[in-house]
Image 1 (cartoon, helix red, strand yellow):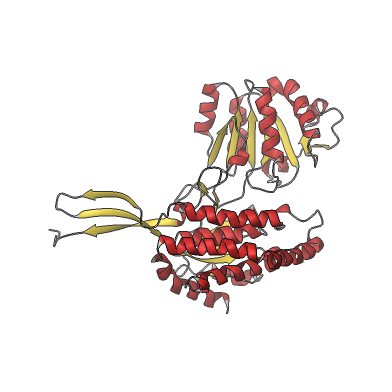
Image 2 (image 1 turned 120 degrees about the horizontal axis):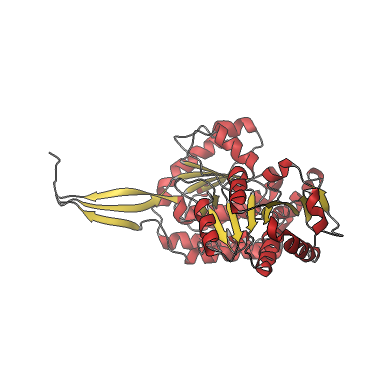
Length: 418
């Protein structure tokens, strides 16, 4: 089946998915959870194929996000059971009102319809996206990165088994298996059949979709994350937050990229940060102005910063550092370089913190906490479809509710308008 035939099939299935009961959808999710565990060997074998091929194409090392382990696959399966426990947004009445003429109006949540999701080599997204779209009553077209091709094919095969076992067409979830950019550009023109496109990945992928799509886009993923250490910061908190924001997981979009330090505390803070980072393996490479190098004595991986570093989403053990003279300079730097994802401040001054939180234009803004909390599960939303960096429809981590729209339902008794 060609990608364009897949699109037509997805469009055909969307109305049926919108009518599925909550229990029918939850049965599919629970069945998929069981089948992922039952087919562990098949899925991990496919993933090993991808990892073997990836060794040829990733000279700096295979990205952590590409690999599936038994533990990761188990966690993915368990997340489906948790998703089944969450309230179903479809059919929720947002508000009701009765007009003076007796008309009864309700605003009701409904599925968006057909959603296309383009993402890089992250096999977990294949399951997360399919599951969230199913629970919210949407058909979904998946276009994963070619580096995870074998894994994605195996995962979608298991999804199809779960759908068919519960009386739902496998056309509800489809994997578009092509590397042809010309084909992808044509797909992005199908505004009458695909209701929404969600690119989940780096800036290059998002820019490609934004440039070529006639379909409404929800941008997710790309980030340059900042953390500002204020002159009135608690240094113990500042060290803990900085180290966690940078090193807990470096391959995710909420990992710290740029550290801004008030010049007044640089002499006290930076040597302590150096000591803390040396204890972490792998060691983080620090990039800073040479005048700051004296604060990192004997630090093994220290380089001179260049201007491009302030606009780089590293997704690696690399941290850019600069000092600022005051909060205004920190705010100006963030305004210039931010991609509006996650930004943070560490300070004990409530007025400074509040000004930062109100001024910074980002989906998630933090005070005295690690930016690595930008996550649907951590926000109590369950598995997320992504973290939206735009302002319309969805912003920040979004999941089920963000995959719905609403319609007005009007009940009358013969009213006519004069």
